[in-house]
Image (cartoon, rainbow, N blue to C red; front, side):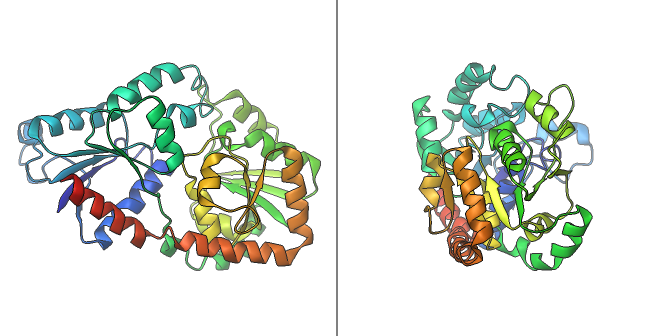
Length: 345
């Protein structure tokens, strides 16, 4: 089977969770012996100006889009015209877009109408969780919807422990380090993260890029310009393994997530994980077994203090979390995705 697996604006999105999930899907598919092409453009053109004349989906058994922009829409229309099955991956919802950038919440109603129209063009919509399926069904989306985990690339985290001292030294981190990983958004719990730091003596570190330009959310600009004394915003780091090595307790008070790839990565590294008690985390994880779920800042603080005082609890949660992550390995993702493709075709 040959699949066009297309991520629009891939170069610009390379630091996003969507790009990470897309890369993992491609690796999982190749391991499952599915031939993957990432661009619809012919590669054997003498004259690039003839590209549009040669653009055809005849060589593909299926098209799988990962984004929702004009390039993805053009492929969706061409797939319909050429009678090639179309799978759309719903990485974007109105709910998880809100709180990401300045004005993102205000455009929510318009975005929801567009997503309803766009995703309904597909033969099948894939999404990361049952929670997300429920969100899409509420719009409603007029296409079949099937959840599939984003998975976690266990191999990409190998030997992360070797980076512990270099990264702790680089960012001047000591003792029990409470950390988060990924783009700095208010939706991901930025304010709670900073208030927890103000209320405790632990070192806090958020490993990931953030914006301070005009499109940045006001809370992100405020917090990253004047962080609490014990909070470090690292910006982009070249090796994500360094973040998981340097930190001790992964704290992720996100308000909305479709799954949370970084949670699985932290679990794969055997870290104790503290999460906001929201439906999507209840779907995948069990409070007191592989994580601690919290509903308020006071509960988050109590969980951090408990993990600091009780290294045995930290180790037990970490070991169980590692087993949870293994159930989301790329091998499982590739097998399920290739089966879905065959059924759609």
